[in-house]
Length: 230
Image 1 (cartoon, helix red, strand yellow):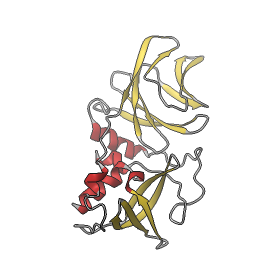
Image 2 (tube, one colour):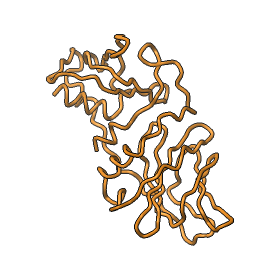
Image 3 (cartoon, helix red, strand yellow):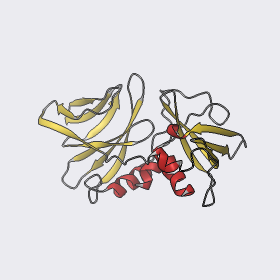
Image 4 (tube, one colour):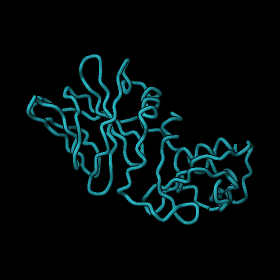
């Protein structure tokens, strides 16, 4: 599931490498259709049925964030209503019978008749586990994306109290750091060292270095370090 990890991106940075302009309502980090296709195809297991045609629907604003919505048209004339959060991380989908046609504040709009629409509500917490759709009998279950376990920090920091030098050649890559409950992205930086359970990276553009606790890194970053150092 490397594509999922690779796509855990944000646009905000602060403290030299990270800019001070991070805001919860920024929605520039929505995934592209090709990236979404790659993610769903790699997951499989019903998340990307054969010959599903994927289309973007838009970014649904809630009170404090955005959810990026796509829909897949199936051969059976049903639809996958697909959600990413604002990281953006793939969340999952609803299998529905109504055509998604638009969105508004906190809602996804579905075609009901030639002169009416119905909606699905989306709150700050994201898609609900089960929903009912006006005009359609039954409930619709949200099929969540599989969760990949994060590597344990101790498996990454095998030499916690001494600098850990890489066994492989480091490369410039995207890093994702959680600070104050928000994920922030460093688009191009290279590993410098790991010491005392803290990782130091160097920004490829500014040349500045910054040090972060391992616990603040994303699962993708921890997996990268584990592979680099062991």
